[in-house]
Length: 106
Image 1 (cartoon, rainbow, N blue to C red):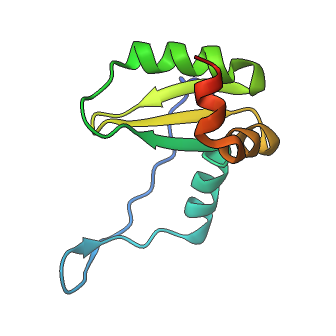
Image 2 (image 1 turned 45 degrees about the vertical axis):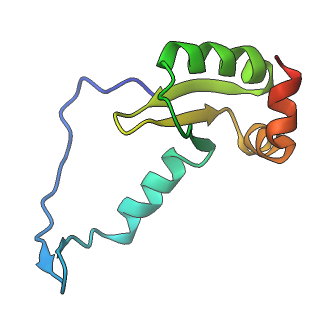
């Protein structure tokens, strides 16, 4: 991922509207397309049960997938991990290998 830019962001406000259940915002299609491109080569993971420390997940992922094109591991406060790969092929290879490849690396 690219580091945050030090230049000001050009943010736009989109007026929310009310649906039956909640407020919604409908940004232009290009916003969704740009977001999709930014996360195109990313796999998302979640561990059921005890929350694993980020450092543990990061170190194991780099050890196992680092030579396959893993660029970065991110996490959010909800316990989801995001594994960003260099390209489509790297991402697909890890996804298609499944858990069998993960266990071989241990």
